[in-house]
Amino acid sequence: DPRFSYSGGLNNQTLSQAGAEANLDVQFAFGLAFPIPGTFYTTGGRPPFIPDAGTPNNTNEPYQDWLDFVLAQPSVPLAISTSYGDHEQTVPKSYALRVCNGLAQLGARGVSLTFSSGDFGVGDGDPNPANQTCFTNDGTNTTRFQPLFPASCP
Image 1 (cartoon, one colour):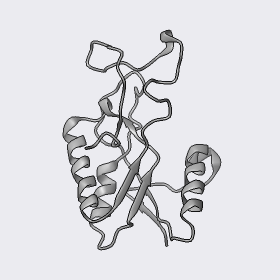
Image 2 (cartoon, helix red, strand yellow; image 1 turned 120 degrees about the horizontal axis):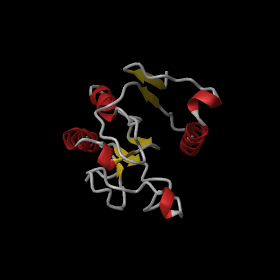
Image 3 (cartoon, helix red, strand yellow; image 1 turned 180 degrees about the vertical axis):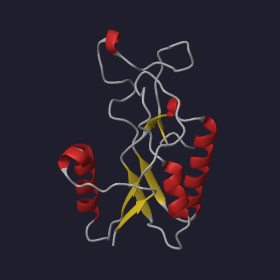
Image 4 (cartoon, helix red, strand yellow; image 1 turned 90 degrees about the vertical axis):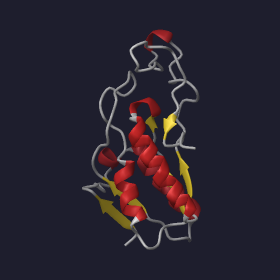
């Protein structure tokens, strides 16, 4: 079976539950890669989190749980694409370092990794400064480019 559910991950394929973006991503990736077999991973849970103006609630992805599962496999896909990312500043540094190190381990096993780098370029996509959410979460609310994690891993 090319589907793996880990740590309570859900695989609801209805449009209302899976979402249009996830639906499009899977159709595009599997269609582009055909006839190479594809693997779909779904992982439940939420990682450590630091809120910011754009992400006040923890919607971050549980990358470490997924990495623990994938790295324990004797054989892994040679290419992995993930269409989601989190605001880097919402990810605690210690957690980010662990995830980046796990991704490097996959790279050492010959895996090519691609991650989302954002939907709106260097800003938040809102041309009205009164509505923008591209601010630091360090208490100064400085306007700053918000890189996405884990695309920001070295």
